[in-house]
Amino acid sequence: MSAKLLVAICISLILLIGCSKETQKTESGTYIGGQIINPTSNFLLLKKDDKLIDSIKLDQNNRFLYKFSDFKQGLYQVFHNEGQVIYVEPNDSLLLRVNTFEFDETLTFTGYGAVKNNLMIELYLQNEQENDLMLQQEVYQQDPETFTRSIIKMKENREAIVSRFFQKYDASVSFQKIIHAIVDYDFYARQEVYPMSHFGVDRIKFLESFPKSFYNYREQADFNDSGLLDLYSYQRFLINYFNQAAFKDYYKEEPYNPLSFTHNLHKLRIINSKISNDSVESFLLTRTIKDYLANSNDKKGGQTLYDMYMERITSEQDRILIQELYEANKKIETGKHIPNEKLINSDSDTLTLDQIIKRPTFVFFWSSARKSHALRAQKLAKTLIQKYPEYTYIAINVNDDFDKWQRTINRYQFDIAKQYFIKDSFDELSQDLALNSLLKTFILDRNGIIINAHANIFSSNFENELLQGLNK
Image (cartoon, rainbow, N blue to C red):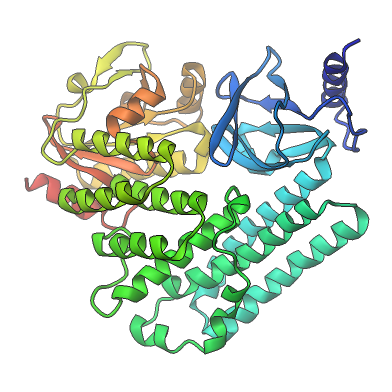
């Protein structure tokens, strides 16, 4: 019996009996496998360093098995509508099981290498719980000293979890570094976002009142560690740091606005001067310009920042990505007709946007993988057209299959007359509409002419944008 077949049989048995103990380390290679409950497609994606390693097919039982070739130890990302970071070492036989209805909450691991990844998931969920608690208790509105004490206590709780783990399990130096980085950079990220989240009367005076010791943690932070780039905690720290650094360059002239041209101009400049690692710089530059282009109607400013980006970017893959986004944005400028996408209604009829739009309309996007977002958006859309009866809305589902889409709209009683499914692939739709976030909302006039291609249905300014659209 081949080693691969043996591992496949072992994986199937583990999945069937729900074994939670670590299996023996395999010497025949490094594997990941598992099962997706309620899959939204017949494959999942495996990435490392934000580059696609492979597309892994699911079998008829929604299971998969993948053997690494040219394996490199460290962090990987698995995506199936949603994504999560995993850690893999040589000869691991890591098995995952997840229900897409509650992705992070149901993601569990068995097999060799499981305990490491279950610890990472535990820390991830702990971070989510802490974030909710911080909002409920208005921790970000505390004075700097009290705020620091609050988050240090949370950090100490996490360090206790990590200490108990390392007392119980042997772990490589590489994995220990990853775990300590998750704890530390979550803490650093909160320190960085605090000045931007505190609702002070005078933000300038507030920033200038900070004790010198408040930023001592920066001496421990590494701004150029590409090996940590897959960690959400490290990404958040970098993004929050550069948002604050950019604001401090202009805070006496303009209010804080992370979507403004001024903010992003300073941010690109500071990233270029502060970061020496090409991978980290490419990540930050690309994230910055991508967010700006996805949220701004400023053609002149967009051109300036795009040119700056193209002069500095070293990653050819990122260069192509942003070039495509920039060209796509030109198709959805204010005053242009929205691309005439083909959609399918609940009766399986194919219609174009031109056929559907007969009155002022806002268009939003949703997926059952983001259930909370979908429910909130649908409920808010109903409320908005009651307040502004001149408008109607179109809700376009992305990333689900047709049957699942129909089950979802029936289950939650979405207004069926306003629900549509994409006719072509999501990749085509996202390219045509420069769609890189489910938050993007289009506001159109009765003829399908774009009033705003970068609105957000959840924005506090969205109702004003609807009113402005009626006056044009």
